Length: 475
Image (cartoon, rainbow, N blue to C red):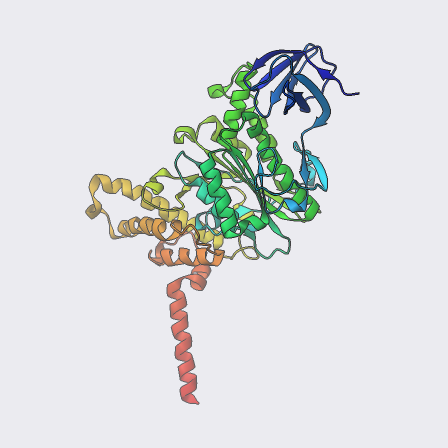
């Protein structure tokens, strides 16, 4: 027989405190029966011999000491089915698109199961996002976790939607799906997301979880776990390549801090819980490829850096756990460049595993290195020009100064609906590099220059045409 406890002694923010209960489990699901007959859901956050702390998903408004609390003996589970594709759900997994409730094939614990490190397979397949600054210079690899570091007011959500629409694994027979989870967003942003997914048709291969800013902070903490559980089901039960986009991890971390304050925990750096590293790792480490399985989970967490400070605890800890970062630049955004990705502080640590002959093209790595070198030198020269003027530069330096401008205007800048193939990206790269003297392409082998440099290709083409004309003349 299920017991109902009416031993609430304290209500603090989203938490209620109970006494004199029988032993209960951590993360156990709770039902709260209100005096008016309605119910609310909660989860055991802490337990001891004397007191049980429950976090309430729908908020503690209307709860008093007369409310009854029932411990269900279960953890939070997400009903999963392949029918989830094409659906828009709340942050707690309830239908938000006026569709029916999902008839589940399974009900899975949202905390997932730890992935045995021995069973992990090194990521190596290239994922094409259609964005040159990612595909060309900071390549995303299947099974990787590659965050986007942005700032308030920058178009990271537009970049996320473009990635969701355009991403694909080249040459793969397995289906590709996107799980999109938004945390702490406004209703206006939510409407934008839903309209974009529906208008572009991307919703057909996506599962969308939306947690709004006015939803309880507790729900914000389970939203990414709901999304990752759905992703793992599609990847490992249905052999799909799944890309998980989580935005905004800063809102998630703020919810962690709020819950820590409600529990009166001793704060760590800037008031965030001391266990935030472990908590973030429990989300990020759910990405990967498992030996013997066709499916995979790839993550792109998006976070806004408070004050554009990359040393802030949230990006700092995320950088330790993940395999690189894509940095969105306020300077490029002010210039009207979209997507405003600054490739110089950006990094993909697994890039070399997913590019080259057989994945992208043999010249990819060398071209990327040369773009970095040329752009870095051009950026440095801008600072020098502001001091001594452009006239004081040598002809060589003027070439690199122009290269930096062309790189931003032709390689970085692209349309919000422009889906560039990796071939397009590399061809644009060569067109820009061709404006530098061949002798300055020190990062590229001579044989690759002979094969791909536009000037060499034009010369080869004219020679072939002349030979054809000679043959036809002899005949």
